[in-house]
Length: 86
Image (cartoon, rainbow, N blue to C red; front, side, top):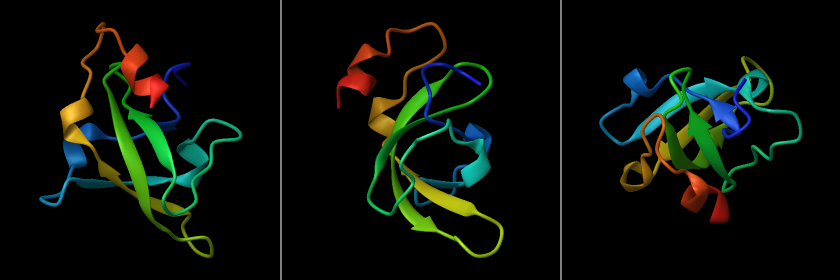
């Protein structure tokens, strides 16, 4: 996993509302995935985006729904320091 992202997401699966589903086991150890938490989501290519947890299934699949803040999208190789300052 990346040292910069908090949780892995598949950025090709963003729904029309700007949300994406990932799973709790895709998060780095110790990352807060409670509803309302802000995280840095990223894919295997190194793209990063700030996100807010909007839903969490604690009983079944461990699914976590994130609302991505697409205006913060940082492509592979770009300076992501502003994402980590928020």
